[in-house]
Length: 104
Image (cartoon, rainbow, N blue to C red; front, side):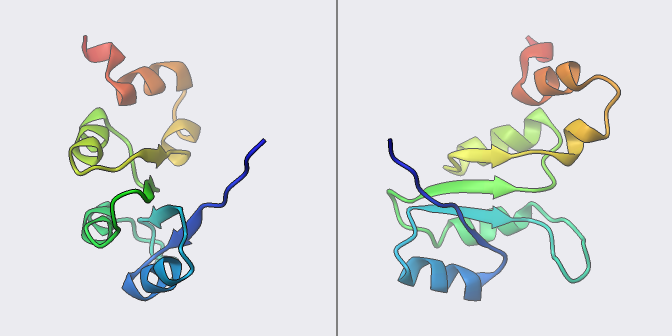
């Protein structure tokens, strides 16, 4: 059994610390915890500074298949999605929408 930690970052200062600690999985939180605003551009800004071989996870504000396609094309390895599923009447359909199965 192998266990690893996701080191969550919010800005370049956090990212620098995570890289110095040799984090193997970095979660980029798109939510500003001071204002609670969400901007997925945070992922794109910070991910470009993460070296190859480090797993990149985008967290918060992901709602559409287009979001997932943008993340994939930018080399993001995983997405943490919660709020989009909690706010819907039909979580199964929302999952299908986000992964692109309802578009096929």
